[in-house]
Every structure is written in C-alpha cells, then in structure tokens.
Image (cartoon, rainbow, N blue to C red; front, side, top):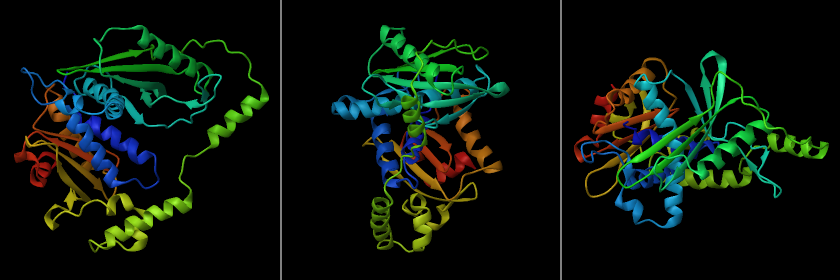
Length: 345
C-alpha cells in the first residue's frame, strides 16, 4: 500500500504548531526537511514503499528517535487515509495531537500521559488511537505490542472517556519497506473496563487540576520571542503591521513568494521549497492566510487522493491540513510553484 510521505510530514507539522498559540515557520521547515531527508517513498524494486534512507542510518541516536516517533504518528493517519481512499474501510474523521487532557497517572512515580489521536466513527461513536514507531520489526505481534495494548486499555479504564473503542498502530520502518500493523477493538462494542481501586478525594482533586492546566509559555517569554521575530522580519521585508504580525506570526514569518505565486486555490499563501539532497528531491512548506474550505479544500483533497487511489505515489506528493500545506517533489522539474499550482488547481 502506498503511503503519502507528505502526509507523514504534515502530521508532524500540525503537532509542531499545536504546542504554541502562534507556531514557528522555521520549526516547520527544518523538521520537514529532517523527516523528508531521512524517509523516502520513491520507487524501489518496482514499488513505492515508504522506507528509510542512508541519511537516517547516518544520524545520531536521538535524531533517529525523533524521526521514528514523528513518522509513527504520521503513519497511523496516512495509513488510515490510504485505506479510506482505496475504499477498504469506511470514511473516518481523524483528529490529532493532545486533544485530550493528560490526566492519567503513569504509575507510582506520577506523571501524565494520553493517547495520540481521536477518531470519529460513523453513528457518532469515537475511537482513541495510539501510534508507535520502531526502527526494527517484522510486522508480527510481539510482547512489546501486547504491553502497549494493555497500557492503552488501562488508560481507557480510568479516564473520563472510558468505554470508548481503542486503536493501536505499530510501525516498523526498515531500509526497504515499512510495516504498519493496526490493532483495534470492535467499534460497535464498548471496551470492557479493567476494575480499579477507588481513588481518594485528594487524588481526584489532583487529576481535576491536571485537566484544567493549559500548556502555554509565560506571556513575558512569549512576547520576547515575538518581538525578536518581528525585528527580524521587519528588517528584511515590508508587509505586515506590528499588530498583524503579532496576531499571525506563523504566516508573516514564512518566506514571501514572487507576486505571481502569492495565491493558491485563490487563498493568500506564503512558503518556499527546500532541497533534500543532491538528487533533486525537495520539500515545500506553505502556510495559508486562512484555512481552505469549500471548493478550495475540495481541489486540494482531490490532488492528495489522486495517486493513492491507485496505491502509487506521483512525482509531486501533496498533503494539506488546517492552514498548512506540504509537498514532496521527487526531482527538480516538479519542485516549483507552477507544478504545485498545476497539481492543485
């Protein structure tokens, strides 16, 4: 099954901006370059299998861990969408990234945890999704997989969303291919809860406080970084007012394209292509002024679905979500704004 690398990269980009009220274009671009350099889905042995590249094997251990973790989350989403597009499963609505409060204790030492995805099923039901990524594996169900399934089951037993269906993806990213195993409970049945000891009022109070916490930077530190970014932008280009930049630094800090490239599907856009190596592969990272909807969204979705319907990847792989759009070009000829417009419009 072909899997969109652009979608894998996009999922990480959505996670990147989810951790901030404003986001950072530089973080989006650099993380996208890192992921798309270490992973590839060009033709190998007649197939379009997602696989590791030599750049991955030459990276340090902590960089490999980042790539595998980010790719694992993206592969859960991309795999589900590929199955949907090929009419192998019914349409689902997949939401991402820490949408639920991290209120579950990991054990006696404390700490908090929560699954990765919230999947909306037909008939107003939901499914909790957890994504795991590994550098090795054979696609078999191992003790490690069973342990992760048990942990997800325990989470459902003691969280406010008890009784919800569960899903776990286990991605093994190898040198020549990638296995993605999907495990799930029957979406038409409730999860059988694991009996728990009653919790005391102090523990319940502490969990309630955790649920109310919001992860935001102190306003003084956040304002400091915004001022620095505004100074950098104002010294290099004319465009936003200080108020406009403060309200949307993600858009205004993105590179300003030439006048003929400042609209895509009739929406203002900023962004740029970045090389992934000497072979001509490139990644595009773009930020729309507003989130596409209606006909604009339909055109972008059609471009994404086109190649996956045949379980193949076109030379220009495109994925969009929210205000972000990413593209992976397999050679220099298609790493252009004009090729991007042609595929979408």
